[in-house]
Image 1 (cartoon, rainbow, N blue to C red):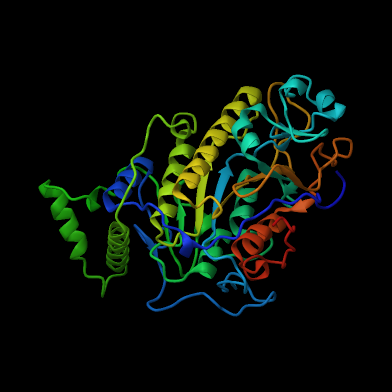
Image 2: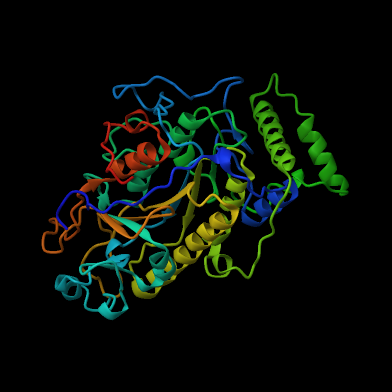
Length: 444
């Protein structure tokens, strides 16, 4: 597939949140789920990242391609589809694209990986050239879009440097970014909702922002003080937080603001009523690991209708220098169960056309195997799930045209992939939230 974009495109059904009558999440259920999945640690404050000045909104901010995105809050374009949500699944450590979308029709694949190649008969075919790893059976049956040849430009294959580039949306690592790409999206989409962006994988620079209310969930012990209790120590702690005087002390001001705004969020969710319990027998929980719990909570947050538009999740150790075969299978099986379970819940709640799940990962793996593992590589394959179909997009990196280090050529800078998520899915002008004005890929 040498063309820049495969002609087959996913179909997207227009969605309006105003037309939904959805179950919602009660305050108690919300708190219980937070306690199960991790607690608020704050993107901009101590407990709840609530940094928006009173009465402000970033909708309609005028920016241009030449404006520093570190200071800009982004433009929502006319005609943006209301109510859409972007769910990022970060495949930590560098996911191997060739073990995700497998070039079973290319004999070079089996020559370069005599021990680690997935047998042709096990591949879940998409066409005569490629197919998905057998661990992705549920998503293959549901329908999934792949974007090939994606990666950083001029990368040094360092976990830290390449992860930071993805976090900042900086494909070459040369822009001066104070905020994260996802954080800038939340600022652009901020309409004063109680919660615009949330990280369910703990605090992350992906969501660092300037204005919108965002929240990060980390350990399982930080929200106990919001639960009604008869324990005198807990009551004293709650009273102490509520009584903080933030006028003359910056730290106290942060605590006061964060605690107060988090309590207001809980009250807003409580006002919606309803609720749902975690079914610990669900495949997404049993087989999806921590990602399954994160995405279970993500579905509840969308169903609660508190304004969430950007959700960050993360999973796995895809840094498979050894034990690649079994580790990749286990990692992808967890992704398959968790994402499929999330989309099943989206179907049940009635917002299936509202949510797009998109994977990211700092880089791919070396093409040639190293014993029973794979070293750091360059280009990889990203996955899109939700209101999409089995389709191949992007530009494949041929196995007979590797770079000087034996890696796949990066044919699509990852900023173009992010540009499509921003502009084509969420309706946020890519040039207002990404440096260098990358051109969207035309996915949607």
